[in-house]
Image (cartoon, rainbow, N blue to C red; front, side, top):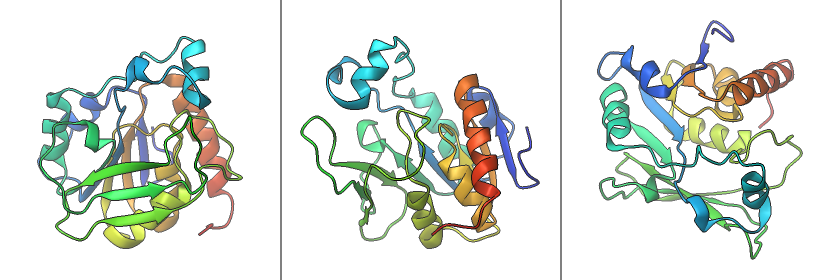
Length: 205
């Protein structure tokens, strides 16, 4: 479905989405994969609430075939949770420092990248004024920070796990083309509503 003339989001498995595109079609893939932590996180914070609802089966690390396709269709990659996958050594990893540190929650998250540069840290609190619609929702400002440093307005961006839609909102304001996939229909619909609400407002940086 076309959310705008530059933002196209499919409510389907991301493997179907990637299969449509030629090698190297996307300038950059920015993805937030399931970390595959499973029952290691069944107490404390939002993870515990998610398991109580009985809908945490999605938390499975993608198989090697996913990463093969991701690397096939994109020239560069930023993979949140890539530290849990079997990927090559990474010099330019990202750290999202959540600032407000809590005993039952992670103080930060890591992204694997394909860039041969120095590692970077983005500092932003986990709790903001943004309404939370997804268990792994990341701030729009995190994606703004990424696009400012590693993208250009004419870039073609891929997001295989759109989730809350933060990446779509940021790409819209930045002027990039985005192709994204979200398998869960409820998350797809909620992220579309959030996208429409946020893109009707001024760009917030």
